[in-house]
Amino acid sequence: MRTTKQLNLFDLTMIVVSLVIGMGIFKTPVKVAASAGVPWIFFAAWIAGGIVALCGALTFAEIGSRLPVAGGYYKIFSYAYHPSLAFSINCIILVSNAASVAGVALIGAEYIAAVLFPDRPDITAIRLLIAAGSIIVFYGVNLMGLKMSARTQNVLTIIKIGLVLLLISALFLADPVSGGTATNTTNVAAHNGWLPMIKAFGICLIAVSFTYGGYQQTINFGGDVKNPASVMPKGIFLGLAIIIGLYLLINITYVHIIGFQNLGSAESIAAILAGQLFGEQGFTVLSVLLFLSVLAYVNVLLMSNPRVIFAMSEDGVLPGFFQKKNGKTQVVITALSVFAALCIVTLFYAQTFDKILNYTIFIDSIGMATSAATIFVLRIRKEGEGNSQVYRMGWYPLQPLLFIAAYLFVAVSIFLDDPMAAVNGLGIFLFFLLLFFIMKRTGWKGSKNI
Image 1 (spheres, rainbow, N blue to C red):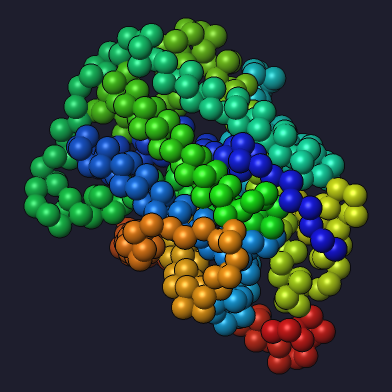
Image 2: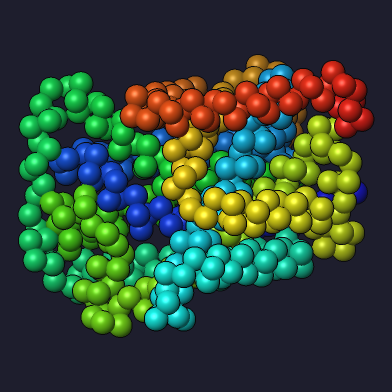
């Protein structure tokens, strides 16, 4: 069935912004500040993360235009590497993304529960039901078709950008909290010498990379974008430019209002800014806006990940019923339903995002580096060279090499900071790798193309 291209430049730009700006920017600056110890390392990490993200975004833009197919994030692995690697890494990505949806939905539920049930905001059952309800609602939205979910995404993304801008306004409209302009000097001594500073910078990049991550999934929409050679790079570049600008401004606001000394140990940095702007009503306003921001993240991952399942089914790695598509709306019904169910199961099983965060970041680092490296394979094989729609990045191969090196550095930093997280992540990867060869050896009917 031929897919009708439905996404324009504005749609793709909003998708990029929604994929990247989740709950991270309202939480990770605390971890980055605590790890940095000094302001210049803190801001250097955010600037470096933005540069790396831009290099990666343009790399994935070329990859997406050379292989403009739905589920491209799986397809590039299958095309460039052994199918076992494609299967294993993409299973990990799907599981970690489902966990991310569950965890982020739960965080949003905690905020809105405090508004709806002020006497019992900490009841686990209430938070779980609100989070599950959010996933179910946007499962229904995505069943109505890609264009409907894209329009919904545009509205929610504008709300999300408005929230960030509202918090940034505290830089001009609010006074610093007591001691807010002070500088953290407690860890300065620990950073004397290059090795301690490099280690601190690497640990900072773990949280920064997580906060900037998500844009790579835009290649899953390669088969749905109008004029991909032009729209893909423009949409990704515009989306990242918006994100980098917003991230730097909001971090400047955090440091100015809260103070670098307090930032590394603050409980709720966004709530502090809202309180400075709105007083006692600030938390309520912020809670509603944060919940809507969470819905945007839930929606966009429900848009993206089923396309990976669909692509894996097309290649015969998963059963053929995952290719079931609504002829009118072109929704991949079975894949969407399974991913939404996986999100809900993970939600009730894990109940917290923190339990899975570290090892998923490690796996994502390896996945990002290896997927970006496929640009070299595509260029060597001259994939898409005869197509006038193909986008070719400038400064090749500097940009992909910088991106790959940065993510390998993040992976090493995670291993040094939390070895068990890396071991757990590798263990899950090896499980799916073994499963692949078991399916192939036993002659499972879906393995004919692997």
